[in-house]
Length: 119
Image (cartoon, rainbow, N blue to C red; front, top):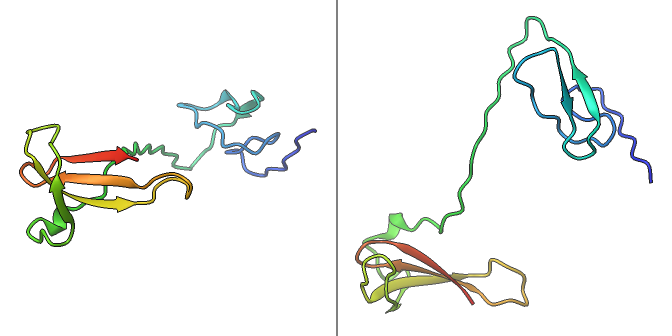
């Protein structure tokens, strides 16, 4: 099956439609990371070009806003992996497909360390 993607924008691969990486300087040649097709990048005059990268880190749901309200989550016996305290609040959430178990989020009542247990 042949891929033909009509793109009028130089930021996209004209063959498969993938986003092309922005080169550090122009003119340059970039290759598509999907189909390995090489494309010439022309110099752009009177146009500001910038590149911003965001690195996202997977974190436990933020529960800092309910620190003083211990009735919001149930309190159970759970040994903290950081300080060894034996009490933690917990909440559950379905984070994977429906035929798999719920994910349990534990928050230590002493040091507020957050642990995840996939069941």
